[in-house]
Figure 1 (cartoon, rainbow, N blue to C red):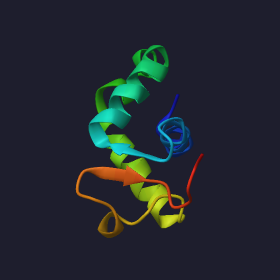
Figure 2 (spheres, rainbow, N blue to C red):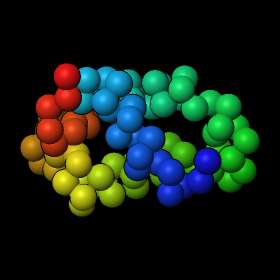
Figure 3 (cartoon, one colour):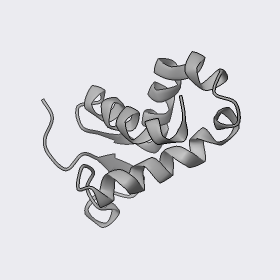
Length: 83
């Protein structure tokens, strides 16, 4: 896993959470799903919680996630409804 993989993996995590979740919920699920990959990812292991925020910014710029101003504080949401 490399930093560039995080936007796609974050999107998949949000899909698994039916399109939205708190940052804490998202990071917990992300860890459960990708712990082994993160542990073997070198420096990313130490920075992934910062880098996942970078990934969220990337997804917002691409229109995949809602702008932070359109979501409740602490919530991350996909732009389109996922069911």
